[in-house]
Length: 111
Image (cartoon, rainbow, N blue to C red; front, side, top):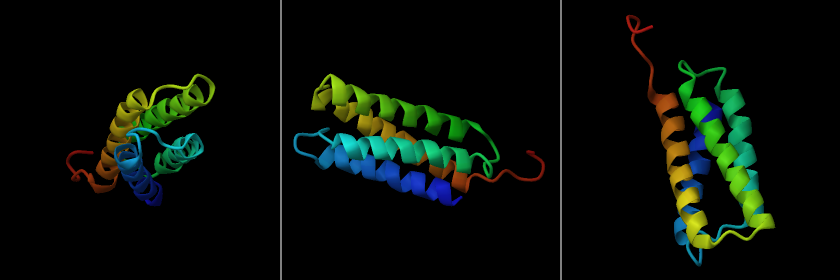
C-alpha cells in the first residue's frame, strides 16, 4: 500500500511538473528518468498487496513509457510539446490506477 501511495504522489508530481514547467512539458530528463525507475520499482512492491493485477501491470507499462521518453529526450531531443502530453497523461493514469488499487477492496462474494 505504501508503494501505491508513493506512485500516486509521483503521478501527481509528473502532471504538475508537465503543466507548470516552462515551456510546458520541459521536465528535467534526470528527474523524469528517476520518476520512471521509481514507478517501475513501486509496481513490483505493490504487486504483492494488490487484489487484482491490472493496476500494477498498467503502472509498469507507463513507467517503461516514461523511461523510453527520457531516453529519447536524452539522445534525440524530443520537443517539449510532444513530451507534455506523454508526461501529463502518464502521470494522471499512474496516479489513478494506483489510487484505484488502494481504494478498491471487493466484498466477500466478489472474490
